[in-house]
Length: 100
Image 1 (cartoon, rainbow, N blue to C red):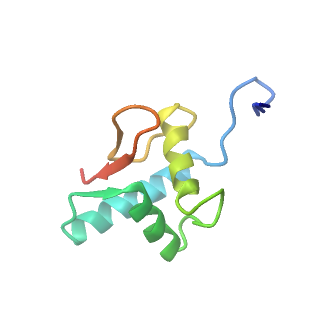
Image 2 (tube, rainbow, N blue to C red):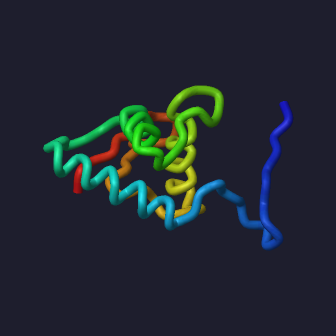
């Protein structure tokens, strides 16, 4: 098995996302859940919604939802801010996004 780790010039792990994108995604999801009286959504439901409104493509990676889940993992790993309301009991378990 080969593992490739990408870092920047300061040897910090890199991400394809930035905090402005996270803020936009967080705001959109929280507003959508409030307007539609939704208490929580799965990561896959969020990924579909974000793609529908052209906020985050859903065709990146090995399967649908991978791109959004990568944003969530990067937030969990403190490479970027965590999406507001995002919760994962432990690594390798499903993500849930809760309305705040």
